[in-house]
Image (cartoon, rainbow over all chains, first blue to last red):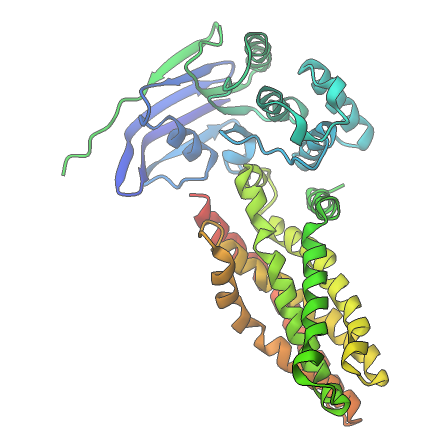
Length: 210
Length: 222
């Protein structure tokens, strides 16, 4: 499997944030997006997820499911966690597991949710409404989506925000496992996740000449 | 369970657990109808004659109250984006959310209407017809409303704008709903044609609403 972007150009308002960017990531490889604030890291991730339509160029996932958009084969972890405060911790994760097709039947899904909660050290909080979780716990719950449904491409936008050191290590382990299984990770992060097969994709602030 | 049903179940659970939206709509409906006899005076014949129209208009306004929240909470907490790339077409996502709105707002309002009819001295023979027209007409409120809710998603104070955009679209449903009721009350044969057109309007909204709402949502998520 191979994620390819060719001569990508993405516009945000009047400004072209990404211009003529080409890159490639193969199975088992992590691509770390770096660059100063405003360099277009989030923009690039959102373009790959399909929320933004590129001005030019294209994004392909070779060896993926051709009937589906690239975004539909990806997990997107953005600034918001996608958590409902009126659902309990377990209900939140169970919803995403069922919605994203993370298991064939209820029993399989329940086991997956249970395992994910245990791994994220949230099992003791499973019956508590998500409204009462701390910022770091909410973040971990948001990352739980990665574990309850299988998707080859992971798009992580600052996944370590509000995580403590132990949780960052936990996340690194999860990402590492995904790469071992032949997944692809595109991550915008300032904290090195300690990955072996990580390449850096440096985005600069592009100036648009008139 | 399919993603559509999963989402529908989650939205209904959330609506029941939060309770605010349903309670506000029902409470608003009750207060508006309770105030009308005070404003119009105790002329029972007059009240009885205009009761179906008043009940219908107040129902439209009550349903409008909770429409703005249809996509807003999901947009704010990031769920909407995840729903969009979940592999389910955005049209189905919009349909599930509109259906949840109808089940948790449209049906309770329609069932409350005959109770409020007592306050307006509604003719006893009109109760059945009233519920029937409202159950057939309220899907259009939720599914057309989804378009407005999607369009005003990022607008500040979008609620008023939503009302301006969407209320005109409710006019056909209102006209045929009322004409079905008066057809039945006056024992003319106007009931069935009006009722069928009313149902057709709802079915049309059922199909077109989610498509338009999904197109609007795609722009809002850019």
